[in-house]
Each structure stands twice: as C-alpha cells, then as structure tokens.
Image 1: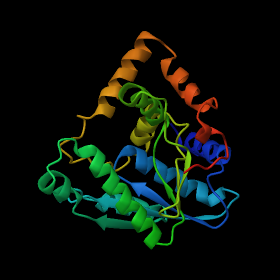
Image 2: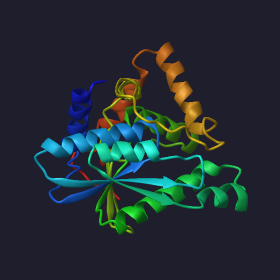
Image 3: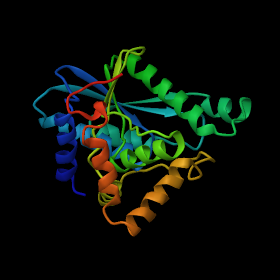
Image 4: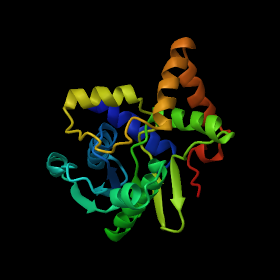
Length: 243
C-alpha cells in the first residue's frame, strides 16, 4: 500500500463517521507494532491538508519491559513533526508477578488503555486514535459470536464519559495485508512485542480461523465486514457517537 491509498482510506473513515472536529487535539496510541506506526503516518500526513485543523501527539505506554526500546520510533515521530511521549508503568509486574493472571491479556489491555487515556487527558487531548484495522473489525465480530453468544463490534467513534475523551479508529477501512505492505514499503521501525502471551491468545486463534474460512468460502471476510456495517449495529451508523 502506498501513502496516497493510506491517506484516502483513512480520510474516508474520518469523513464517514465525522471523527475530527475543529480544534481537536488527538493522541495516537503507539504500541510499537506495524498498525500503530501506520496510523501515525496517516494522521501526521492528513494533518497537513485535511480541511479541519487538528493537533496531534503520539503516546506509547511501556508496561515495564526493559527491552521495549522506543528510540527509533521516537526518531520517526520527530521526523513526522509529532511530539512523542513515553508513559512508563509497572503493568507487567502487576499482571504477571503480583496477580499471576492465568488470562493476562484482558487485565493488561484494560490497564494499558487506562494509562494511555490518562496520559492523553494530561496532555490536553480530547480525542484518542486507536489503530484498529478492517481485520480487527472482522475478528472482533466473530469473537463475540463464538465466545459471548451475541453480535458485537467496537464502534468507529466512542465517547468515554468517565474520561471525557472520544476514541476514534481511522483505519477501519484498511486491510491488515495493506498495512503489512505499507510496513515493508516504508520500512517501519517495528518493535517485537516482548510479552510472553503474544501469539497465544483467543484473537490469534480467531485470526487463523478467519483465514481458513476465507480459503474455504471466498468472500467470508467481506460478508462479516458488511454484516457489521449494514446498520444492524447502531454504533456503525455514519456520524453517530456512542458510549
């Protein structure tokens, strides 16, 4: 995927769901992976020519791994003229050592999001951008059916009233395959996830299941995505903000 296509698909999502308003200050969540770095490129590029003015910062939450070296990502952020902030936490110690969680991903995710949102508010942001892409939409919807017995997916725009911050997901129209192509083309400084649970989760299982079902039933991915976007879920009606 080339830069122009990245801008085009990101802008379409932003326009369809009215993600940006004049004067917004948006925090981009940086995990160190290909998705968040692609989002950083997209938002920093759109900032130059998007008709609605907005500010941008980048925030990375370090859950406590010493090998989580953000040097190259900090450099990239500076090259893109985006202020970069690292938030250091002890989430790893709490989840793995103190709590000794058998299913660490859920608690870790909640704590990381909490630390990120707190940081975003402390830097004066009213919005936060997450790097969920089209495949995340498909996998989340399928996971809700398999594990929860109902049809659900996160919303493109979500207002968190307790935090008084709005979450936006500008990459929902972009396939993961395109993100991988962008990573290779622009040589993104991706950091390997040091978490011992990485690659051994329910989401990873569902990701492989989607690949199998798409191979056996061509068009499966599109059908799931269209099921999410066809109006069954009120939060996916363009322009609507949900809590």
